[in-house]
Each structure stands twice: as C-alpha cells, then as structure tokens.
Length: 451
Ligand SMILES: C[S@@+](CC[C@H](N)C(=O)[O-])C[C@H]1O[C@@H](n2cnc3c(N)ncnc32)[C@H](O)[C@@H]1O
Figure 1 (cartoon, helix red, strand yellow):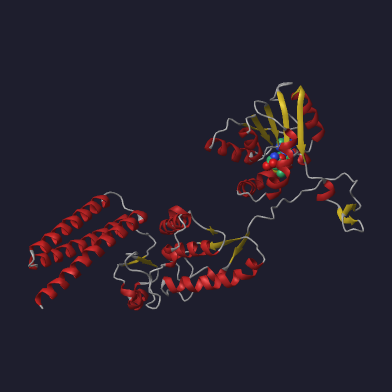
Figure 2: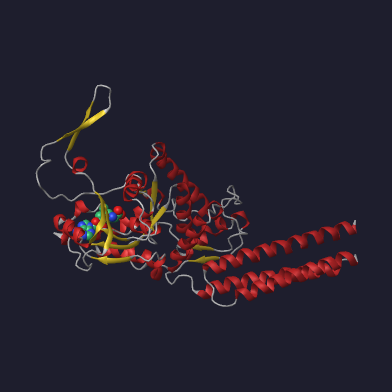
C-alpha cells in the first residue's frame, strides 16, 4: 500500500513542488499554516520531525523559526526536490526517504516534536505511524498534525443552514462510515489555467514581416483572453516551438513568446521532439533572449517602440540582422519588403546548421567595416574645415569615436554568440549614429560657410 501512495506522489511531485513554491496553495498560506504554527508554538532549538514533509515547504518554514529539522517522506521525488532546495539554500535540514509508519532510523525518545501537515490521511499504516510517533517522541514531546477531513473531501452532500442563513452543519451522504480507499486529486484553485492557442502559434501569412505579424498575433491573443480576464482567471499561455510551422523562424518565435508573456500572466514553451538546446540552437538562443527581456520587463524587445509600423518593418538601428527561414527564392521575392523602413542590415537565411559562430563574426566584421568607412568620411570632412577651432573639435570627436570603436572591436574578439552579437551591435550602431550626426553637422557648417 505504501508503494501505491509513493507512486502517486512521485507522479505529482514536480507539479506539486512548482505550484506550492509559486504560492498557489493559498489555503495553506492563509488558513492552515497560521493556525497550525500557532498551535505548535515556540519551536526554536527543538529537534523536530516533519512526517510526510513533501518537497519541504513547511519543513523550511519551521527551520527558519530555529527548529532542528528532519523531514521524511515516502516519495523519492518529493525528497529529491526538498534536497535540491536545501542544497540551493541550506537551512541545515536532513531529509530521508522513509515511511512514517516505520521510523526505525530514529532511536526511541529522540525527538521533541513530530509535525505532519496534510499527510497522515494518505498514510496506509496510520496506526503504526501513530505508535512510531509515540516511540520516537520524548516523554514531554508534542505531536501536531492536520489532515483533510473526510467530511469535506469525500461524502459531503449538503450544507445545513439555519433560518438566519448561517451554516449550521453539514449533511453527510451515505458511505461516510464505510472504510474505503480513495485516490484524491489535489489541485490549487489559484494556479493559472494553461491555455494553448493555436491562433497565435505561428506567423500568420507565412513570411510576413515580424512587426505586423506580432501585432496581428497580439490582437488575436487579446481578443481570446478578454473572456477569461473579465472573470479574473489567471492565465498562462502556452506556445509551441516548432520549426516546421508555417513562417517559423527563431527570431519570430522568441519575440512571439515575449509578446505573449507580457499580454498574459506568463508563457510556457513546450517542445516536442529532439533536444531543444542541441538540435535547435538558434531557437534556444532567441528564447533565452526572450526570457531575459521578460525578466527585465523590456517590452521594447518585442514591441519595437521606435518601429515605423506604416513602413512595415522593425527598427534597423537596433536590430542589425534578421534571421529567416524559407527558401532563398522566397526571400529574394520579399527582399524589398524586408528593406522597408530603411533597414539595411544583412538578411541571414536560417539553415538547419543554425547560426555558425562564423556568421556572427562576419556580421561583426561588416559592422566594423561600416564604422571605419564612416570615420574616413569624417576625416575627409574635417580636412575641408576652414575654422581651426571647428577642425580641432571634429578631430577630438573623431579620436573619441575611433577609440570607442577600437574598444568594441577588442570586445568582439573571442567566441561570439547571439547574445554577445546583439549587445555589441547595439553599441556599434549607437556609436555610428553619433559619427553620422557629426558628419551631417560638419557638412551643414561647410554649406553655411560657403554661403
Ligand atoms: C499533501 S502532501 C503534503 C506535503 C507536506 N507536508 C506539505 O504540507 O507540503 C502529502 C505527502 O505525504 C507523503 N506521505 C504519504 N504517506 C506517507 C507515509 N506513509 N510516510 C511518509 N510520507 C507519506 C506523500 O508522499 C506526500 O508527499
């Protein structure tokens, strides 16, 4: 029987740990624990056994109150979650895989308090468990437990109301006094509903540019969410990572994930197939960037606040390159569309081999070449300058920008990945923008001087 219980809790361990740690077990936090800890009283310095500790949420709370904690649980997976949290954030808790109905690893009268929260009703040998608690507890020890009462979980039929409308009691259905075994389903009402919405899954229209495709997806998403939101249902959206989907490319999928995360209460990506970070490295990188943007609340990453939507494409200054799937012929046909909005960055065709490191090196080399050309232009302009003071100022700025670009070039040496390339590219483009501004001002000055 213990084996069955362990099997079901092992299966539930991952979701249980995630939801409890996310705070979705609101009844625990608002009702059960305050009353339970109040009952347990002062615990600091005591040796305490948490019987059926699960992933250790309450064990950790008691350890933080100063108790010397040991947690036991039947489920190996629960104990694995508890131990990894202990490793991450040590509180001196010892965890053992054991049944509370066989505590032979603990000597007689070695424990000051046994606590057990929402576990004893699951224990197949509860009578043995109680006698084990008795054996391991010191003579002045404390046993504190709470359970789901079968009145409320199993055979409740009706509330009994007084005339005033107050609840007077509960009318139990037949079967309440029958001894039986039930597998109970736990679920936390506060946990987000997870939705998968195929309408925002891909890039409608195939290879339409990212910005309008994202806008279209956002519109669909908001419309579909309106009903749930109006009822205050917390939602997590789920999207697929599927390179075979129409119009999919790594960049679009990453930005779509960020857009969906901001429009909802979170976004989960599911991935079926080969290993995510090995077989689709570029998707992995773009989703990593999406996660960073989500964590940093950087909405500009997917909304492109500065994009000229009328021109239909994303900001060429911030995003130096574009990764696309699709055949070269198709991309050729659409290349005018991609150049809208003044975008001049290279178009890189996404291939199954992914972005080789050399691709980023090549992109960086192109950006520095562009920088050197602009500095040469500025040098030419400065030589035509008649005013010694203005010429000296241009020279000073030229030296500053040349030094900045040289520094960025030095930073660019070594391995290059998508994240590094994007950081670098933003810095290079900002520097080039400043150089461009000085060139324009110098030309204007020359024009004015000639008038
Ligand atoms: C509802 S969970 C509660 C976990 C934890 N006490 C908490 O409050 O978060 C019930 C736990 O009791 C454990 N359990 C059930 N029977 C057990 C037994 N005989 N010995 C030890 N643990 C048991 C299950 O594996 C499960 O982790």
